[in-house]
Each structure stands twice: as structure tokens, then as C-alpha cells.
Length: 214
Length: 219
Image 1 (cartoon, rainbow over the protein chains, first blue to last red):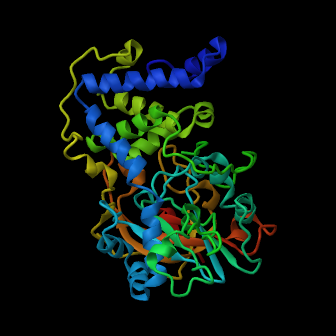
Image 2: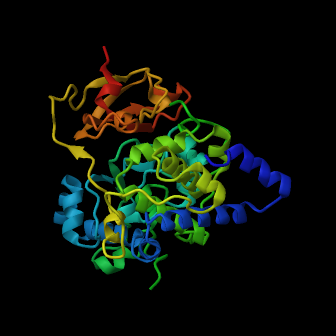
Image 3: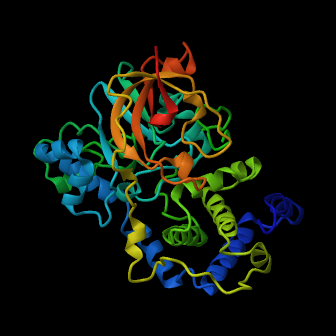
């Protein structure tokens, strides 16, 4: 590397520069160099960022889950061949080629993690939150998932299996939580509002009908 | 590589700290780093596994002290240097000193949507699968100094095959320029007690996605 990481590290401490300004300068230089060389087009970068900020997010996953709750035939297709079912739904421009859904039941609670990096079903959930990419989540979820879930305020019944999925390949996983009680007859649109990002990772539960904003 | 990135089962990192209403990016530079990585990844000069391998070889203290997007920025600089697209002296100077090299593909405002999706990593099967659903398998006790997707905490441990995914690009070879060499991919599930000992919560099971070369039949 141009300047060693140790140099940069020491530099921060010696001059008490804020981490942010050094990083900002470094990233600006990186983009400048790549643009000057003709490798990247800043206008394309703007569009990529805008897509992640506005289009690619957990609302996509929520549509899928709400439909799976409301439509048993769709749920069956989703479980059998998620890439095909998701593509057919048409909510996502670029559906994953390798994605599976994991069904929660009264006896099984699924949780997704990536211990080696931060693999995440971005096409349906958007960019992963900071905690998902953090050392505490990556280290502990495979060893003491109930302790981790407690930090999210989630208690899974003591006799349920906690099934942790470490995403060590390009397969992507998304959890289908159990449909909340008291939602019989609800439309997909209403159900969608109960589906949180965390309940599709397994670190949360869907909202109850009472919690849903009208 | 037995690096600090292989975090499963490590202790001492503290609590998980969820953030309410987290934005896509906390600072504008984070978005630039992500977009730069997506754009350069699309050029096809390196693979997703080369990228991972490069971030994994950041010095351990840097890896642990850097945020996610800081690691992505450092990793991208290293990838650019390793693949001869930017010289170290240009990062010193903060500007381009030489003309760019021709790239096979480039992201533009017209085609940018291609980088929002992921290419498929599945490949045609090239040999019969050595394992089937329900097989008891032991993860090999291997310690390659290069990239691997077999986490330390399952090495030498016995689990059961619960899914057979078909053949996928093999990260261990593609990351080091030895080609895709597609391998059968399985999901192998372990009883938590077989990973963490008798004190582990008996209701916990953990699975990894494992490539065939990582596995052997358990007696």
C-alpha cells in the first residue's frame, strides 16, 4: 500500500486528526485517481448510491414475506425455488440467482449470520446494518445465539431449536417469520407493514397488529 | 487463512449494538466507497473472492480497528495496486500520474443497474456428488495460508448434510488466480454441542455451506 496502514494508524494518534477527515481525504483521492484514469464515471457512482439509498431495501423483502403469508401457492413456490418465485413477483430488478427462504415454525427459529465477512441477502434486504457486519455479531451468533437475540429483545421459546445459518458461500438466505396472530383476512399491503428487516434476518419478530402504524 | 476475519466463536468483542432507523450510509464517503468497489468489481479484473481474500490479508490490527467501509477502501487500494491498475506512488501523490489501462467493462449511467445484482456462482455439474442428504460428514482439519471459506470453528467437527446445492465456483482456487474449479456445495448442520462442548445450549444447531473438498465421510 502507498502508505502503510501502521503509518496511517500512528499518524492518527500523533496528530489527533479525526478518523473521518483522514478517511474522507483518502476516499476522495481514490475516486479522483480512478476517474482521471477513466476507470469510473462519477455519474454512474451517483446512480449506484442513489439506488442503495432509495430502491434496494427491506421493503422488497417485506413484499415477498407478506405475499408468502397471504398466498399459500406463492409460499410453496418460494420455498421450492426462491429465485424463480422472487423474479416472478417483479419487485426486484436484479433478483439473486442463489437465494433460499428459511421457514420459522413453532419449533424452529432461523437466524442468519456471516462469520467470515458480511454476506447478506442485499437484493431483498438492502445493505446490511452495521451490527450485522460487526465483530460481536459475527463472533457470537454461532456460539450463543440466544444471548445475541436477547440483546435484540427477542426471546425464543426454550424448547424451540435455534437454527443458525452461517453464510459461508454465495448462497443467500432470508427468514420467513411466522405470521402474527390476529391478522386473519389481512391484505398483503397491511401484512407488509408488520414485516421488519430484523425479522427476515432472524434477530427480530414481526410487529404485532397493535404495533402496526395505521 | 487463519486470520482475524474468521470470527465464529471468538470471545471478547462485547455486545451487539443495534441502531434504530439506521441510514444506508452514515457518511457520504461510505457510499462512494461502496460504489467504487461495485464499479471496479464489474471491470472483471478480479473476482468477489479475490476481494475478500485481499481484505482478509489487511494487517490484523488494521482489520479489527477499521470500520466496514474503511476496510473496503483499504482493500480496494490494495486490489488496484496488486492488479497494476494504480501505482502506489499515485496513492502517495493523491492523483493519477500515468494513463489508465484499458478495462474490459466499465459501469456507466446507462448500464449501472448490472452492478446492483449479483452474477450467478452456480456452474454445471462436472462430477457425481460424493455426499448425499443425511450423510454424516467430518470437516477436514485444514489450515491453508490462502483464502478459504471453511471457518475454523467447524474444522474436524462432524455434522450432517441437510442441503445439496449443486456445483459452485470454488473460492479457494478462484481467489488465488487458479480458476473457478467448480465444486459441489452442501449445507452441513452441526449440533451446537459438537462445536462448543457439553455446556452449549442443546437447542442450538449451526450450519455452514461447505464445498466438497472441505469434507470427508465420518465413520
